Every structure is written in C-alpha cells, then in structure tokens.
Amino acid sequence: MSTVLFSVENHVATITLNRPEALNALNYELRQELAEAWKRIKEDEDIRVGILTGAGRAFCAGVDVKETVRRLEGVQQQPAGGEGPGSSLYALDIYKPLIAALSSSYHSTKYCRSKFIL
Image (cartoon, rainbow, N blue to C red; front, side, top):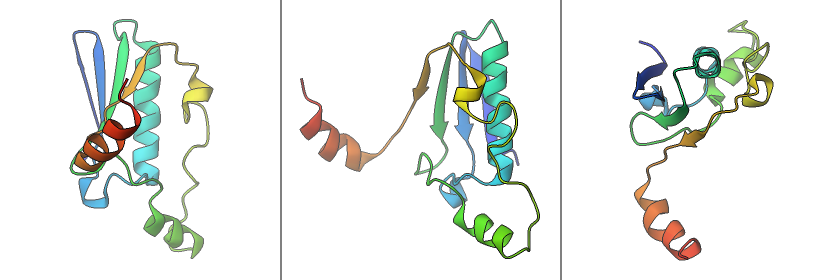
C-alpha cells in the first residue's frame, strides 16, 4: 500500500496522506513519498495548484512516535526523514499555490466559527 496517493485532474494535483490507521502520522516511507509528490508538483508544468489532504478521520497526527522510538532503540536503522533534496517545501522552492484541505467537525463548528467570522 502506498502511503501517499497522488492524482492530477484539470491542472490540480491532489496529494492524500494514506495511513489512516496511524492517523496519517509521518513515518519514513510517507516522508519519502511526500517529498517525491512535492517534486512532481514543482516540475510538472501542467500542474497549477496542489492540494494536500489526509485519508480517514485525521489530516496528520505529526511524526510517527512509534517509529521514532524503534529507531532510537536501534531496532530500525533508517535515516530520519526530511533529509536530502526535495524533503521540504523550502528546499523545493515551489512557486505554485498549495492548499491544505482539512476536515474536522470540531474545528469547523467551534473554532472557525468563533474566531474567523468576518
């Protein structure tokens, strides 16, 4: 199973974090696949905008703590993600609009309505 789903339709690239069982926590594999997706958005002239979303009930829980603990205990010997070219948006210099598509009933009903009504 791919940890990042990538599709393009009508000049819009959609990146979906695809580890819903782990609340889309960023493990090594997901970070590597995400870096490739960012690179593809940057280099493909047919793509005009990118959308990042998460599968399941969470957008992204952050770093995969279980994997980090295993790595620190020496069980898993992989370099930390975020290294090398294309590992962050700053390193890529992407000059296209990027949208984070979040869904949460709590934030949309409690926080957003009370803080961002114009």
